[in-house]
Length: 223
View 1 (cartoon, rainbow, N blue to C red):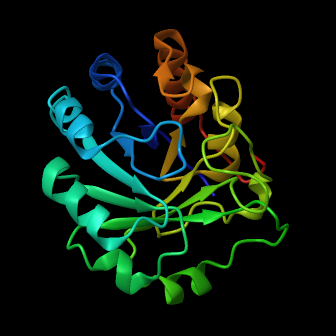
View 2 (spheres, rainbow, N blue to C red; view 1 turned 180 degrees about the vertical axis):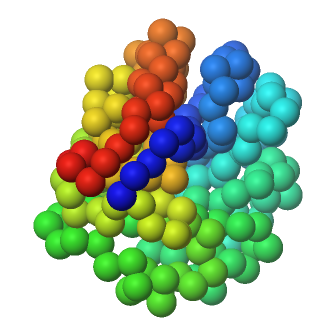
C-alpha cells in the first residue's frame, strides 16, 4: 500500500473553554468534540456547549459525544448545539444512533480484548454509521483516560472512514498514523494539562506530528 500526501483528519475532543476551541481552528483542526457523557470529567451542559460553538472557526465540525445518554438528552443537545456529527461511546444500537437525523460515528471499545477488528461485522451491526472510532476503552478502562491499545488489531487503510483514539499524544501520534493509516485521529487527555484544560503547546505539537506523518511516503514495508 502506498500513500503520498494523504491528509489525516484531526479531532480535538473534550473541549471546555472557548479559547481552546478558537485555537483548535487556528491550528487547522477538522473537528472539536463536546462531551455530554454522564460520567465524564469533561461533561458539558447543552447551554455551555452552545456558547462555545460560537468560537468555532469556519469549516470546523462540531461533534457531540455521548455514552448511553437517554433519547431526551441527545435530542436536547441536537436542538441547542446543532452538531454536525454525533459520536456514541456506549451500548447504543443503530436504530437509536440514527434516530436523531444527524450523521453519526460509533466508538468501538478495544479494551478487554485482543481480537482483530472485523469490519464486516461492524457494518452489519451499525449499517447507518458514517464511520467508526476505535478507542482504548472497554473492560476496566474508561474513555478519555489516556490508555492506548494494540494498533496492529486494526485493518490498515480501507474504504470505511475509521478514526484512532486512546492514549494518543504528540510523542506517539506520528507512529500511530503510519501504523494504521486512519481517516482521522482523535485526542483528548494527550493535549491537556488537566481534564478539559487544553495545553496550547501540546495542541500545536500534536497537529505538527500528524502533518509530518501525512507528508511521509509509505510503502509496503512501512509496518
